[in-house]
Length: 418
Image 1 (tube, rainbow, N blue to C red):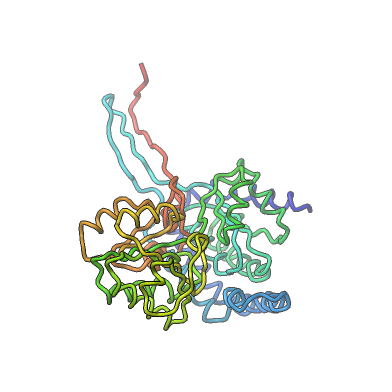
Image 2: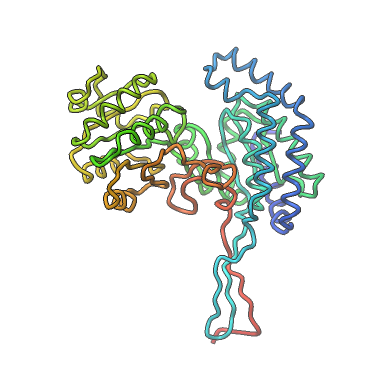
């Protein structure tokens, strides 16, 4: 069977399943998620055996230690995946609740009711846990899903998907509600992107190049998460100890993720905070790249930053620092370099903070808190498929509730239009 035929078969099956899935009771969907979690535990040996094949191939291909760590599965990590499915099952049901209702003059009752999107295609790289997270969130929100993981995790993804598919169907969900495309050829992605009659939305989860390629070639609406480029502004009224703590967490706790800070702006009247932050970052192994004024103001020896540095998502222990003379200048810099994911201000001045929170146009904005908090689990949404930098449909962490849309349910007694 050709690549196109295999993808088309999966998409058609998902479309059929989506109609049946949307009509199932919330308890059936939640019960299926719990059964899927237990099935992963029961078949952990099979999943780890498949994962060992991917790990061996990854080492032979020269994957970095970070990539191999993302790929690796053991009993503890499989248990965490299972627990995440159970946590999704325990979330409030996002389907069927009445968002708003009103009665018009002729007595027609109109309700705006949350409903599934339909079929969601998810294209992702490296992390096999995404297979379970994506399937779980889609089922919780009443959607069928078509999954296409990266080639480096092909054996792990197929093994996990098989376990989830069998458990879901045994628990009463329709065949095809979870479909894994077991093809590493990039043509599979291209075919998925050309099936708007079967797939309602595509979510690419991975590097910027993958997301850009999907977005530029898709005939299906795409929910994007381009890149982080997260930024923090330290105001002249910042508490120094608080600023050190927050910036350290935002950069050094886990630098290789989208919500880690990349650009730091410090008010010219906050030299104490600047030096304390830089000293802490350097002690933590962070390379600090500063504008000329930063290099003059800090006690330590740091690298000179280029213009390009302030548009670079390092995903590493590197940070760019610039001195600004005002909140206005900080806001201008943030607007120029932001990807729209998350930004923060550190200040004890409430009026300054309120203006920052009001004017910065990003999915999540913070006052005196770390941008690392931008996460579906931290926000109480359960697992997430990603963090959307879009402004249409969903923005920020995308959990089960963000995978629904709405329809108008109209209840009448013979009303007609005259």
